[in-house]
Each structure stands twice: as C-alpha cells, then as structure tokens.
Image (cartoon, rainbow, N blue to C red; front, side, top):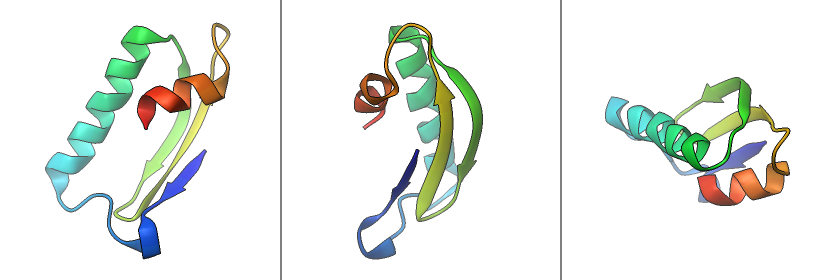
Length: 65
C-alpha cells in the first residue's frame, strides 16, 4: 500500500510525526490484528506491506486513514 500527499506535499514535517504515524499503526493493530511485513516512511509518502488472516487489507487500511 502506498499513499502520497496532495501535490506531493509533505505528510511528515518532523521526527515527532514519524512517531505519531507508528503509534497510529499500533492502535489499529489493537483493533484488528495484522502483520506489518515492511514499511518505508518518507516525508511526502509511505509504503506499507501488510497481511492479515482476520480481516481484509482494505478494512485494515480504513482504520489507518
């Protein structure tokens, strides 16, 4: 899964934004179990490689957004 900021604008402006993003992933995990296979967080976009035996990936992604 990839997501990019509008007009490639920054999604993440400083180090604390990276931490908040990872905290969001953790809170979603508490609701729906998933495996985060790999991730790459950059200032204007991110990549997530997820899998879940319990739910579909679109349902997991709805909670992340």
